Length: 117
Image 1 (cartoon, one colour):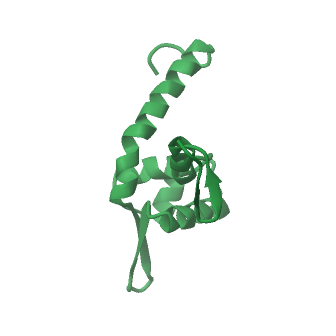
Image 2 (spheres, rainbow, N blue to C red):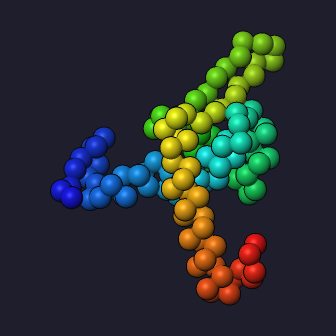
Protein backbone atom coordinates (compact mmCIF):
# COMPACT_ATOMS: atom_id res chain seq x y z
CA UNK A 1 0.00 0.00 0.00
CA UNK A 2 1.12 3.51 -0.72
CA UNK A 3 2.00 5.88 2.14
CA UNK A 4 -0.71 8.34 3.10
CA UNK A 5 -1.06 11.42 5.26
CA UNK A 6 -3.81 11.93 7.82
CA UNK A 7 -3.89 14.78 10.38
CA UNK A 8 -0.43 15.90 9.27
CA UNK A 9 1.14 12.49 9.96
CA UNK A 10 2.50 9.98 7.44
CA UNK A 11 1.25 6.40 7.74
CA UNK A 12 2.85 3.45 5.99
CA UNK A 13 0.17 0.79 6.45
CA UNK A 14 -3.43 0.26 7.55
CA UNK A 15 -2.13 -1.58 10.65
CA UNK A 16 -0.12 1.46 11.71
CA UNK A 17 -3.20 3.64 11.17
CA UNK A 18 -5.39 1.30 13.24
CA UNK A 19 -2.81 1.27 16.03
CA UNK A 20 -2.99 5.08 16.17
CA UNK A 21 -6.55 4.52 17.43
CA UNK A 22 -6.02 1.61 19.84
CA UNK A 23 -2.26 1.37 20.40
CA UNK A 24 -0.29 2.27 23.48
CA UNK A 25 -0.35 1.04 27.04
CA UNK A 26 -3.74 2.37 28.14
CA UNK A 27 -6.16 2.67 25.21
CA UNK A 28 -6.97 -1.04 25.00
CA UNK A 29 -7.62 -1.39 28.76
CA UNK A 30 -9.96 1.63 28.57
CA UNK A 31 -11.79 0.14 25.58
CA UNK A 32 -12.07 -3.27 27.26
CA UNK A 33 -13.42 -1.73 30.48
CA UNK A 34 -16.05 0.18 28.52
CA UNK A 35 -16.92 -2.88 26.41
CA UNK A 36 -18.94 -4.13 29.38
CA UNK A 37 -21.09 -1.00 29.23
CA UNK A 38 -21.00 2.73 29.95
CA UNK A 39 -19.11 3.78 33.09
CA UNK A 40 -18.65 6.85 35.21
CA UNK A 41 -15.10 8.14 35.56
CA UNK A 42 -14.50 6.70 39.04
CA UNK A 43 -15.81 3.28 38.08
CA UNK A 44 -13.67 3.32 34.94
CA UNK A 45 -10.57 4.24 36.96
CA UNK A 46 -11.28 1.42 39.42
CA UNK A 47 -11.66 -1.04 36.52
CA UNK A 48 -8.16 -0.30 35.19
CA UNK A 49 -5.36 -1.27 37.56
CA UNK A 50 -2.40 1.11 37.89
CA UNK A 51 -3.75 3.92 35.68
CA UNK A 52 -3.28 7.44 37.02
CA UNK A 53 -5.90 10.18 36.82
CA UNK A 54 -3.72 12.15 34.40
CA UNK A 55 -3.27 9.17 32.08
CA UNK A 56 -6.95 8.20 32.18
CA UNK A 57 -7.97 11.78 31.36
CA UNK A 58 -5.44 11.90 28.51
CA UNK A 59 -6.60 8.59 27.04
CA UNK A 60 -10.30 9.45 27.34
CA UNK A 61 -9.73 12.75 25.54
CA UNK A 62 -7.72 11.04 22.80
CA UNK A 63 -10.31 8.27 22.36
CA UNK A 64 -13.09 10.87 22.29
CA UNK A 65 -11.24 12.91 19.65
CA UNK A 66 -10.79 9.76 17.53
CA UNK A 67 -14.51 8.98 17.74
CA UNK A 68 -14.00 5.87 19.86
CA UNK A 69 -15.63 7.08 23.09
CA UNK A 70 -18.56 9.34 23.88
CA UNK A 71 -18.76 11.52 26.96
CA UNK A 72 -22.25 12.30 28.22
CA UNK A 73 -22.75 14.96 30.88
CA UNK A 74 -25.94 14.73 32.91
CA UNK A 75 -26.99 18.11 34.26
CA UNK A 76 -27.60 17.04 37.82
CA UNK A 77 -26.33 18.13 41.20
CA UNK A 78 -23.58 16.99 41.39
CA UNK A 79 -23.00 16.64 37.62
CA UNK A 80 -22.64 13.07 36.40
CA UNK A 81 -20.39 12.14 33.44
CA UNK A 82 -20.66 8.77 31.70
CA UNK A 83 -18.26 7.35 29.12
CA UNK A 84 -19.32 4.80 26.50
CA UNK A 85 -17.90 3.14 23.40
CA UNK A 86 -19.00 4.20 19.93
CA UNK A 87 -19.73 1.79 17.08
CA UNK A 88 -16.23 2.54 15.80
CA UNK A 89 -14.73 1.30 19.07
CA UNK A 90 -17.05 -1.71 19.17
CA UNK A 91 -15.75 -2.70 15.73
CA UNK A 92 -12.22 -2.81 17.18
CA UNK A 93 -13.12 -5.43 19.81
CA UNK A 94 -12.52 -8.51 17.58
CA UNK A 95 -9.04 -7.21 16.71
CA UNK A 96 -8.29 -6.50 20.38
CA UNK A 97 -9.50 -9.97 21.34
CA UNK A 98 -7.25 -11.49 18.65
CA UNK A 99 -4.28 -9.50 20.00
CA UNK A 100 -5.08 -10.70 23.52
CA UNK A 101 -5.18 -14.32 22.33
CA UNK A 102 -1.85 -13.87 20.54
CA UNK A 103 -0.38 -12.29 23.67
CA UNK A 104 -1.47 -15.28 25.78
CA UNK A 105 0.11 -17.71 23.29
CA UNK A 106 3.36 -15.75 23.29
CA UNK A 107 3.34 -15.52 27.11
CA UNK A 108 2.82 -19.27 27.35
CA UNK A 109 5.64 -19.88 24.85
CA UNK A 110 7.94 -17.68 26.96
CA UNK A 111 6.96 -19.44 30.19
CA UNK A 112 5.23 -16.38 31.62
CA UNK A 113 1.77 -17.93 31.53
CA UNK A 114 1.06 -21.49 32.59
CA UNK A 115 -1.95 -23.55 31.58
CA UNK A 116 -5.00 -21.92 30.05
CA UNK A 117 -5.13 -18.77 32.23
